[in-house]
Amino acid sequence: MKRVAIIGVGQSAFVRGYEGSIRELAFEGFKEAMEDAKISVKDIDASIICSAPEYDKQRSPAGVIVEYLGLIPQPTCYVETVCSSSSTGLMVAYSMIQAALYDVVAVIGFQKMSEISSMEVQERMGRGADIQWESPFGTMMPAYYAMYARAYMEEYGLTLDDLAKVRVKAATYGQINEKAVYRKPVTLEDFTDPESRLAAPVADPLRVGDCCANADGSSCVIVANGEKAKAMCERPVWILGLGAASEAVNMAGRPDLTRGLRVGIEAGEKAYKMAGVTPKDIDVAEVHDCFTIAEIMAYENLGFAKPGEGRDLIRSKETYKEGSIPVNVDGGLLSKGHPIGATGGSQIRTIVKQLRGEAGQMQVKDPAIGLIHNIGGVGLYGNVTILGRE
Amino acid sequence: MAKKEEQDTRFSKFGTVSFTSITKTNDFIDYLEEGKVMGTRCKNCGKTFFPPRVDCYNCLCSDIEWFEISGRGRLLSYTKLMFAPVGFEDDLPYMLGLADFGDFKVFGRVSKEIPEEEIKVAMEVVPRVVKLPEGRITYELTKA
Ligand SMILES: [Zn+2]
Image 1 (spheres, helix red, strand yellow):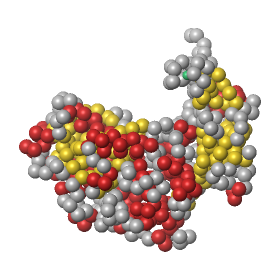
Image 2 (cartoon, chains in turn yellow, purple):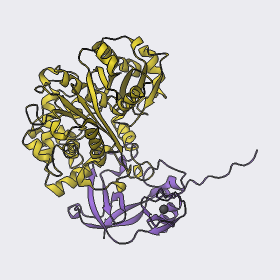
Image 3 (cartoon, rainbow over the protein chains, first blue to last red):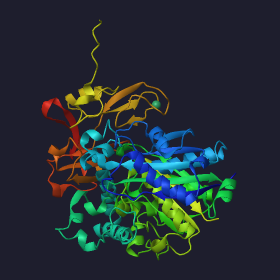
Image 4 (cartoon, each protein chain N blue to C red):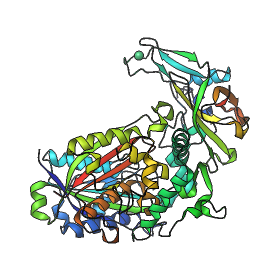
């Protein structure tokens, strides 16, 4: 099989209340990726635009965005798996290149969530689940993840403190990531002080501090076939493995809440197999920490820890930058913010920079293989991507 | 001009806010009115479905029958919401839960009638129909 590489990555700053329209937002991530790849719009053969609908009013956003970015008349399309849209976009781009239809494809993710109130955001997200049988009860994302958290606490003795530790780690790195929306430090005391906003219950046992923030942002990943990549790029980062999966939309269809998200397991196994590596080979990872519990489940679902033992990794700080498996050392969704359609591309950008040794203060020591775990909805969709330096 | 045929929108009465009005499972609402929470079963292969559906992916047939949820379920998890999506603010605070009935699981509100300190993972629950204001109807999980 031919090889496919990433030759450019970019993202906008993730912010609350971006002062511009979606096309202008998309331009920010695109510009950084194009400058990173040192190419011009003529070099891009096709594009894939990724976001979740209903946050802004634009129907079929791909057309509007490619026109603004100067990517016409090249073909484009819209790809959506809610929060994992841009990882799915990468999978589609990879397939287009493997099929030899196109040589260079840009995957552009964006989301402008600030056009609606956070209650409306929760309503939209709740409708990303089962609108016929679940939404009429008043569901929202934190509630679903809270049910996983409670199941873990009952089954394995996971504690509120363990969850808080995930947020403390995220904030450690969010402070040094200039693209992150949340730059303040967080301590365990912030979760026990009744005066603290982070300690306020949202859907128990999850508190404000256990939840990532809505944000506006964009990302861009430029993918090329192996030969072009070697010709165009000094340090291409290679796509070694791609795994994806889907799951029952309704909680009633989920196999076992104490085993995390099945899409994470399925997508992970496929990606490891395709890349010919095991969890032990991963030097640095980005996992989908939309909630603190989601990071603990990801440790287990990706094979970094056995079921029930994910908490040990955060207790022992093994997922810090200096640990055996550094995870989300860019602040994760918890600190960076989670602009749905842009999130996967931002995670990919982080791993690409890590593998190139360009992550600055966040740099892990000499990583060769990195992994991205990006979940759509409450484990409705899952994507795991493995990248390598060689 | 021919008179427009009336649409069967019974499902729009389900829950606090329904996002679906037309479905082939509309009889679910009539059963709720009768006090019954029902699932469906494929007459061909016997597969049971909750939430109910009218098509079986197992054998691609649409010959189903309704059955009433009987017996006790085991509460697998629950959560108490302090924030709600638009349209549900007046219900706050409320609880959501998931219960295992063996062949299927049931997701829904947890009854506010159960004292909170009694709500525990693994407690036995049963579904119960709840009539809401303005003719709306739903079900909840309550103590067995
Ligand atoms: Zn059947």
